[in-house]
Image 1 (spheres, rainbow, N blue to C red):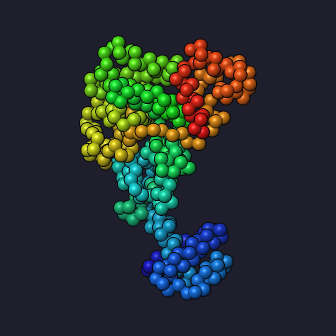
Image 2 (cartoon, rainbow, N blue to C red):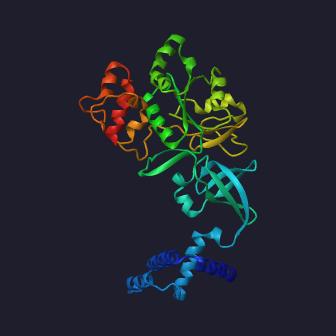
Image 3 (cartoon, one colour):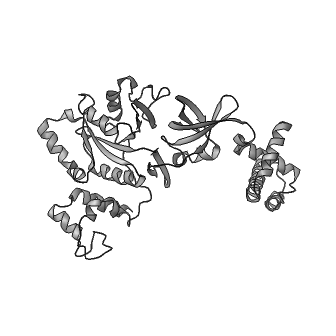
Length: 384
């Protein structure tokens, strides 16, 4: 560390409030203790020394500990030590990688680094579609300084940690749930889960049925009867075929001028639909393709693609299942609006499961409420 860097860090240190400085000294003391243990040079009184450091008066720090404090500060807050030179305008995240993100700014795509704190929480703190403020460190290194508040989001529990939220896309106007017939077959229960998450996040849903050319008209009509409950709820449904190029105009109209996301099971043809809508994208599973001017697109990460005319679509990886983030049993009925249309439950707090005089259960028996939708409700309720 040069004298100039040390002076800059000391100035930064003096600007922190007392709580921040105290936490910094504790971390530095712990790091020093670990370093001593690794080199087998830790004195026998190391634990006592660490306890003393925990109570240290940071206004008059021990010189040896100060060196560790500056080291921690240089690692954690490098963008704040005087290396930021230029503030840039707000850009949009179009793809995310390890500790980095691709951001479109002034029509150009920049690869921007994430701070250590942001990188550790990047599944929830930053997502494709986020608006971010970018600054420059030096002449060539771009840094994401701030993620702006989101208008909407689509999220789920992290598959590896159910206590952590994973944001799939941010700031989308529309989420198109792409399904298919035959291969793979329709999965209405997945649609139900997506509809809950979409509405909780503030976006609007569209159901896009791909591969309709695989069935003759009679068989297709019979298959699509499963979607009748969603039509009654007012959810737009677009029938299309990427391979036969049917229904693409209707899909374009549904997404025109909006930021949308394509979500759904693997194999339903999300990338195929994008290729059909804009052939020059050239997207293919397992191959490298052009996306949003530059950068790569694969099925392993979400990527924002510009279709022109103000229409942008985030292509997301296929999923096997879709969990719901921190949904409570009390909230669940709100996301089945057909239940609210039924009046007459004997109990005001009716859960629509075991209570006598439940009007919703009666509506299910009469066919007024979809039995399939009701069974989805029960399954989700039992999982909460």
